[in-house]
Length: 143
Length: 143
DNA sequence: GTGGCTGCAAATCATTTGCATATAC
DNA sequence: GTATATGCAAATGATTTGCAGCCAC
Image 1 (cartoon, rainbow over the protein chains, first blue to last red):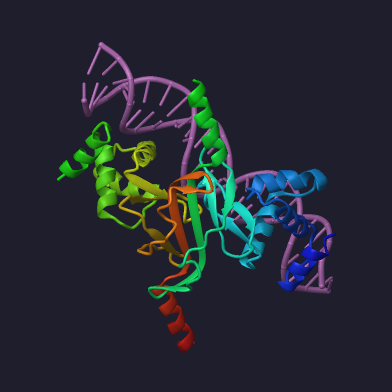
Image 2 (tube, helix red, strand yellow; image 1 turned 180 degrees about the vertical axis):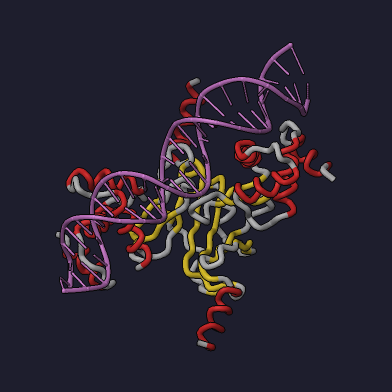
């Protein structure tokens, strides 16, 4: 069950610990771009001894190894994502949901721009998602 | 001197107040993507009665009117920018400097994506700037 | 004259830090 | 056995909130 995550950790010369495995599994199974609190409170149920600090520490080290990435899209808290190839993100300012956006931009892969070394590229699209938008229209038509 | 900013405020049906004028002027004269603290402490010198709350409030209302935009690029605090057309941003993870990036992406102008209404697009490039990169190389060669 | 704005102090919330204990290797 | 990870409690720092007085219109 956890072999997959054990493998990832070993490949990156990280010690295999329960919190790291659980966090990797959580992110692998929940592509909802959760924040620390969501990860923590979900894992806490099965592992009552888990601490928030450990979640912070683990996410930080997984990020350093580029196994996961953090998103600053919300502006108030970091959101986490298992890093699988370049993709962009859309956040609905109404319901808060974050979607992956499959758009690729010609500039995304460039590692050098004007002499600056680019190590990370993030594209954020903010607006109203289809679902909220439809609800809004319906409310207006009925009102 | 402030006519330009008075005009902007009036055009957006905002009351003309001293903090708003000063903040607009500051952002117009400092394209350094400052955070709240930088704006506050700079303006505080000339206007000792100014409060941080007012800076927060003013930035918020200017943002709602789309006169300025906030950047979540740093991850720990919002940075502000007088909004002049679409452009992207580069942040140096070493010295913290944020540059404008003149790249335009084909997707930047699209207002609808997969049924979602896009109201804001932000492209963040993170890495090591030319200056820090050069210093680093020099240090390695000499060491 | 009044609603919206300013400014202060206190509260909130995400994240960080210091440190003692536990555990992966 | 030891360096590293975990977990707790306290600290920090950005931002928000409640509220009294002020001022742009």
